[in-house]
Length: 200
Image 1: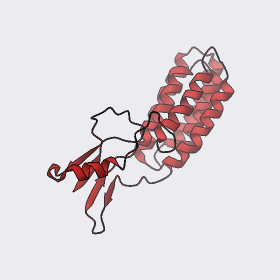
Image 2: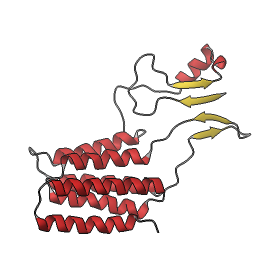
Image 3: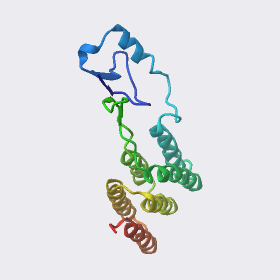
Image 4: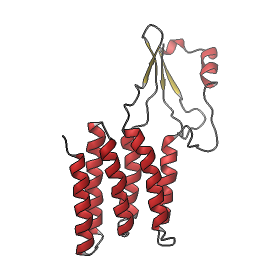
């Protein structure tokens, strides 16, 4: 029997939402349904302890709120970016575990899709590109996480994803109408990060 997890920590579920797929489906009975249901906890709110996407979302939201015109506190945004950098750098520097779990003889029994680091990276850098281009200090600070991730990332897929976001951030900064000095300074730093991301 193979169990495929359909719902992940932090997913919004309704009554009747499929949490598992069971192969072959003929193995499903009342006892199995009850046993599987007992392994899941449904709550009213997300928690960062099992849901890494929520932790990233919370810190990203803090950064975005800090650069809003009503707040204009770019030091808080920079601190949030620093906290995001610490977590994401650890994540991209590691080999991710297989989503599959096997029994004692090696037969695959559980497939539990993991969070893709590229999705978390997109969460952060899309938000900064959308909401922070008018603040040169925050945009420069946004290159810091990219630089650290460039040094730490081992996956070619993640590194290519970082390059794509670097290009988008640079385009957004240039389009924001900053002066030549600011554009040239940002471009020089972006080029240094791009060099760190270049294939060796």
